[in-house]
Image (cartoon, rainbow, N blue to C red; front, side, top):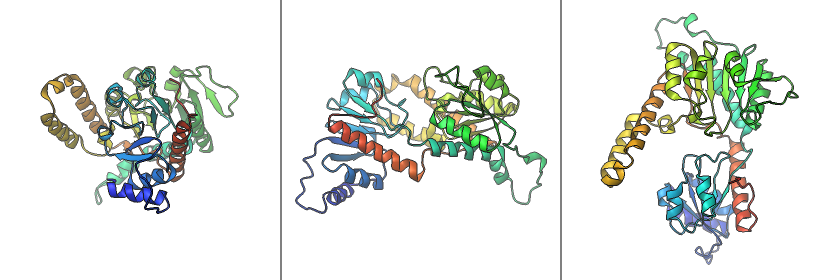
Length: 373
């Protein structure tokens, strides 16, 4: 946790150690959430001249906030905007913006900026890490008890060479995945809701319909934003169209996959395995569902009963998503990581640098990397 002493030291370093530096007179009051101490050090140094603060939780952001910089796990909704009337900028440290109520921001005159194109290489490489780990059955091999009977047949792997990879979404990440797949001597087929007719000029890539992608792919990997059109794209109906034993890889957004449908298909053997960096409720990627639910119960006991009753339906849905997420992660043929596909040294450096540029540009009256709202 970043302490007030950490913040003071960082600002002193940013001011070159000048003890006379006035820490209260900064151009923009900006709160950062979801950051680590070293990150605050960086932002305080790079944004000298602004009042840079840290909030451990979104609820700790002061009402005086003129800007807030959050990550994808922190939703910026109407309720937050109403309680922060001075807010004029949301600078998300991500390319995706589905955690932000863009319409509400537009209605209140709040500018939204993001960081495009910072992580296509690292996300594509992580996609292949999950793909290789799933196809080589690494989790099953690692879980085999030492001294127990070992069967080569029961843990036989799948070569990527010669397999058909179906890529849903052919933006910068999807196209980078295709390049890696071709290097592995895979057949690559592509479909995308944004460009349904595709681009036949991409060497080695065949554009197909969504139905063809499901019917032909040995491995399906998802690289599209979460929209009403892509929500639960991996559904019972679409999974039924897939080849038996298909592998599902998701490094995009958890809600692209209907978790209950995936569990059923894994249990029946129709899906041979899955590599997941995201889930519908990602808290279970870092702690058990039992711990999360216990914490929620404590929060409920401390909260206003009447307000809580109004959220009963939401709470039930959240618990269902938690339990489904916990269940899918328990399968031995599921490889999972806690939403870290973006998290390489080079990608995070770009993420931080562009966030700083976005804030500086906003303060100068010429915001860049604005999200079209």
